[in-house]
Length: 239
Image (cartoon, rainbow, N blue to C red; front, side, top):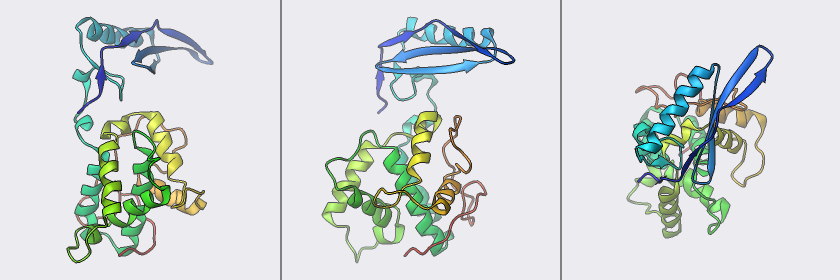
């Protein structure tokens, strides 16, 4: 279900001076969160502001996640990131090497924690990461009838599934910043080595990104390929 509100305020266009002229920033507030979009011309900024005003006048609800009218929403808002990630792992498992499986699980774990609606403060942080890496993103272990999932792990993963953002989060630059930052942490939350950070960014199709613009969500590889959109995977072992 998409979180939405009718509490929307549209501000005046802000003109910003640049070395080669001006840019025009449309700013609006949905609930308690401000959103903005910068355009190279005033005409484009006026057009976007008019669209937002029209949606408000028509009584359209706005998404508290993306800041846009629900009528603008892509199908991404209907897909939970955790569900997508688990499905990706299951479909790709037969085509990944043991090294790729482990590295993908590590990257998915960091990204998933970064895409939670709230920190899982009621759980031990290490146990949350272990549950994700060793169970949620380990297709063989999770589906093995001879090794039932421990109750503690199931409780953690059920909470994560309920509290993960939708795929629309990949359309928000601030969320991508959070993911990029999270990809630089180890299982215990400490800083990872530079080589691990670089590998994780490649896996998530965020290689070279510092403060990224809007990115589409990662896409699964074609059958038989072990990488995101042709990007290489890292190395390590996974069961």
